[in-house]
Structures are given as C-alpha cells and as structure tokens.
Image 1 (tube, rainbow, N blue to C red):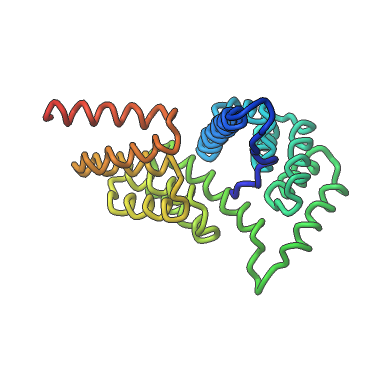
Image 2: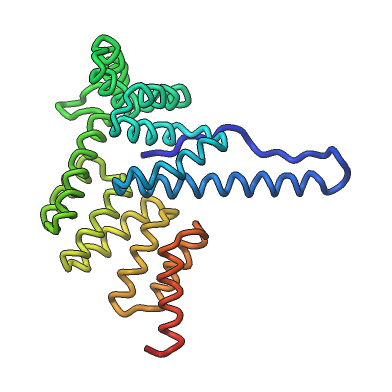
Length: 268
C-alpha cells in the first residue's frame, strides 16, 4: 500500500516579531510528526489484521485533518468489515477524491456497492479500473494482483494463528509472487519463518522488507528480535534504537531495548 501525498505544506510566518515564525513552524512540524506516527501505528495494526487496534489512531489522524487517501481507505475497509456499508462507501469515495488512481480503494468501493445491490455503480467502478489497468498477456493488472495478494495474505494469517507456519509461509510466497514489492508481505513471512524455526529464512525476509522500506518500524523491531535470538545483543539494540528513532512511542521497541540493555549491564 503506497502513501498518498499529504495535504498542505508547512510555512513560516514573519508576523508578530522576530523569531515567532520559527516557533510556530516548530509547533506545526511537531503536530505533523505526531500525525505521521499515528498513521504508522494504525497502518501497522491494519496490515496485521488488527482492525479494532488500527481504528483509533487512524480516526485520530483523520480528526487532525490528515488528508491521506490510504487513511480513508483503511477506515473504509474497517467500516466494511463491520457491515457499515454506507460509511465504507463514503470513506472509499473520499480516498478516491484525493487519489483518483487508487485502484485498491476503487475495487473495494465496487465490492461494497455490489453488496448493497448497487450493481450498476459497482460495474462502473470496475470499468474504470480495467480501463486504467488492462490485462497484459494473461496477467491481471496491478489492482487485481494486489487483491489476490491480500487474499493469500489473509489466508496466511489464519494458518499462522493456527500454528501452521509452513502453510502460512507458502501463502505468503504466493502473495509475494504477485506483489514482490509489498514490504509488509516480506515482514509477515519473516515472522512465520521465525515461528517455524527457519531463522535464515526469517532474516532474509526481514532484510528484504527493509530494503523495500528502510523506514519500516516493525521490520526494525522484528530484526532486533532475530538478532537477539542469534545472541547478537549489540545488533539487536541498534535495531531497536533505529525503530525508536522513527517512532519514539513504539511500546514493544522500548520494552525490548530496556530489557536488552539491562541484561547487558548485568552481564547475563
């Protein structure tokens, strides 16, 4: 899932005397940073399928006038999962107003419209996606590949929850085959690999996730755990420090870092 361009820009003011604009700009920057952290937390929970956990930070970000297409899209998916079709349609349309080429939002809008019986409108939305992303040599367009990849990822999460880690990895492999540049798929694969005892596979998957998105906080956290399991405490601490540099409020990173630091000081 790609980030949409944020609405607005920060500018300094020269009114009110020397230096005041700088203070105002720093305050606006802090608000923007806090909003980005809310979106990161909500996105991480959403990608993990924890929709209830994802909703609160995403709603708070939206309340702060964060006009991000993917925020509206994720909230739309959450509303749809709860059966609030009207609210979901509204949110998907808001996402598309910001990014008219957001095919995933358009497909989810079409599905939700069809569920409400608005088949003609659903067909129009699907037609727009097809016109934008024609099938090439029997291979579906990017939006269809994304939808299929999400379906495999959902099944993988169910296998993982049941302790069927090899099957989970297999489904993540199918998803990655369709969308190899989705960093969250590689991270999820890393977690399933770790649980099945495939440390090498887990390390390779989390490394790939970070290659695709060096600012992926949860990937840094998982990499730290892998380093810790391998007895590389210094590397683990460095990974959690990188995570906290990106998201100072990340609770797990703070806990892991505090434990590892205390353990190293104690010499255990």
